[in-house]
Length: 275
Length: 250
Image (cartoon, rainbow over all chains, first blue to last red; front, side, top):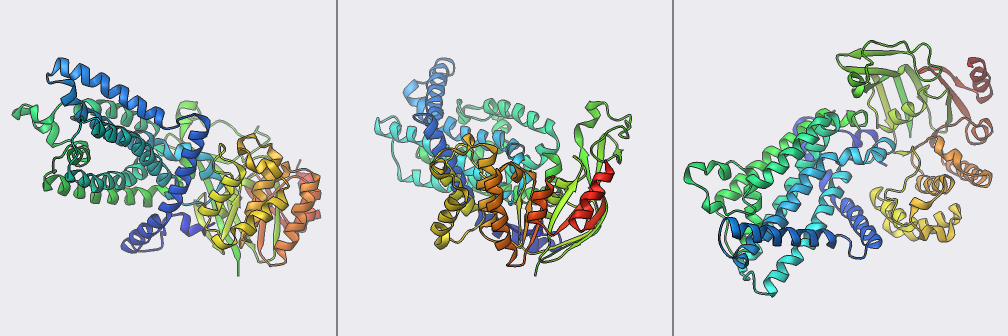
């Protein structure tokens, strides 16, 4: 129910003013996105007995399968590997949902974009919070792991909270940027999905990054997703991530939001034509 | 004070799939009985000139009925005013809060119940929390949906959607209300109620712009008509004259 200028970019404003204004608006819109995502989850529970927990079961099955195979191929015992692999897959499922499903956010909300003048933050925030709610469902597995003694509990685990926060905050620019670009250039969505599959193998999820050959360490070092994975998984396994990881992530966050802002300024007004 | 001012505005809609649709040869749209006939292309993108050089001022208290053939640009005009489509050229200026009721419904989540959707819309559109119970009673009373409000909205008929959407869109008395044809899905009884509500609404001096083909409904709801043909403004003013011009067009 906002005025025309509100739904678009505030194009009349200078860049710094517009960026600040967009930021404030986005934060204010988060609560609404949460309400929407919550309702989505409620409806999911209504139609199936355990709702998003089906996905959690999926994660559990994947973890068990990969842990067994990994221990056979790479070595180590299943019980030692299972915490590392399980948490890896839990965090990965959030990353891949944010990136993979994020690409089609606007196209999926086509009907609403074409018929209302709501801010597009709502669709992004809805997607973020839905992923977050699903992620919280998956975290149940972590507590089960702690309860049955597969994972030991540390105070360090609390450091995972800022990690999770950083992960989902970054989801915001990733979705805004990718969903805008993918609405216009439909090929990009397929490319992103392809790369995401590759990333699952390249990122140390089911193999230990400490076992990588020194000459090939760049595989891990230049993989941004690794840092996002590690600032959540590390603390939960009782390891404090190096400050360097956080520095890299803050830099990525800054650059990412800048890119998303540029894309928003350039493409937002034409979004209705793209979808 | 609310006003819609449009100066020499054109809206060109790009069709990005054109290159794979073999439309690059620039087919003749002269034979098409609907839509605009002005098209062009730039590179692999095919462009429909949905609205061309539109000049229009809609003042407070105007209830405008937009008429024209299918594809004449009615929905494009509404989307333009709503800020969904940007003008490709020209200047436009909308003063006041805009509420757009385009498309089939306003319920964001078809799997959620009517009440849940009302609450969500209240949230998305910043309805004051304190007045929500009063609003919900108003919606119950206006839509007469009864128990259906406790069921998922995906099972609603088109008319039921129209009732719920119209009730929600007119609750807050926006400065500019835009309504697409979907509202016509309501039955005669609903249309009576909608007329009464619009009278009340307009007594508070706001702007309403609706697209419709039904002359009776149009006459009851509006005080002006706007005739579009092939993306151009043909006539803006008296309803009867607009409809007689519309008849001549065919």
